[in-house]
Amino acid sequence: MKMIRAIIQPHRLEAVRDALTQRGIMGMTVFEARGYGRQRGHTEVYRGAEYQVAFRPKIVADLVVPDNQVDDATDAIVSAAKSGSVGDGKIFIFEVGDAIRIRTGDRDENAL
Image (cartoon, helix red, strand yellow):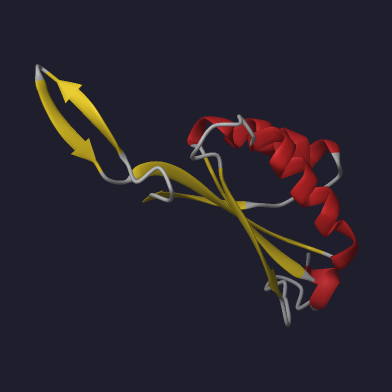
């Protein structure tokens, strides 16, 4: 099993969810985050005054999938989240040692 962590632009979340669902990948945990990468923030003007916005709003989506679905999941995320602009995001993949469904006690892939 692998955990996929996708850091994406907030307005791309629904497209990513739809793309994953179309490929039969269910279940995702999402939380809001702020950060920056190569774009290092940006400058905005508000009422005539310029100010630096150092952290951009992002969405972090975590999902755990069997090893045989990793490529499908990452392809779906990339195709739905990609705009071609700086700040589209990143995907990280981690090995998951164990998973347990609390309600039933199921373990490993049965817990997904």
